[in-house]
Length: 42
Image (cartoon, rainbow, N blue to C red; front, side, top):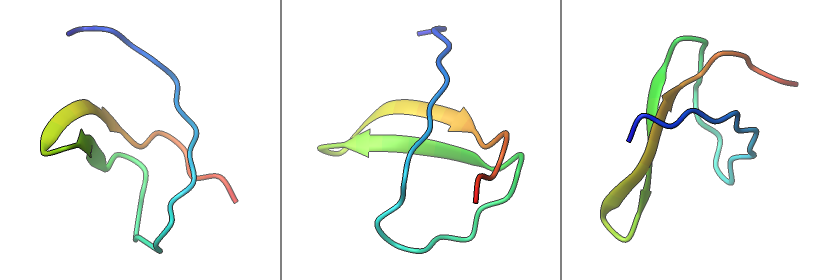
């Protein structure tokens, strides 16, 4: 808890995203990460 990381990824399904949106990364029903969208890349 409390660690910071920079992450760049690709989505397999189209999803509406905007800067400032909060998100969670889940695996097997458990939250393994959470963050905030800071930049949208083309």
